Image 1: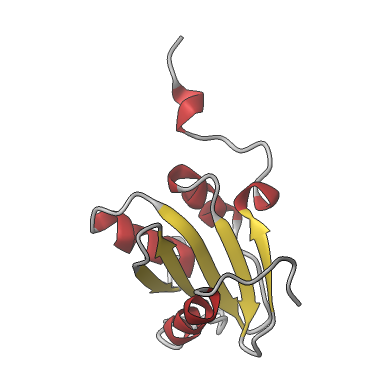
Image 2: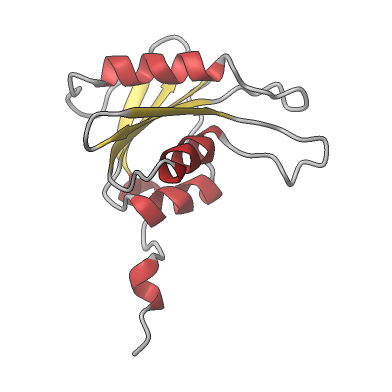
Length: 137
């Protein structure tokens, strides 16, 4: 199901997220997640979830994609596609990381069958906290 018109690059972005999902290291939850992050210049950074036996050091696919991109100097993002087996939405921590770098991000939430929905980050994280909230008066 789609909520808004599809941008031409979304098929490619969703496919990149599906492929990234296959690289997931999820021996504990068995819940594979793939993400594909699109910069405003058209470059795509992918990520998968990486679990750890201690749980806390685990990292979500969305944050993996963002951290890869930011570590390469990227700072301007247009959209992210997140694919799971059942169309699960990004967790709260991932939403906050997205907000740090792209408060107006388009989020495409899909499943492995090709179903997806398009939402704004603001819809996923209303009344968010960002860098501007840290300004000293």
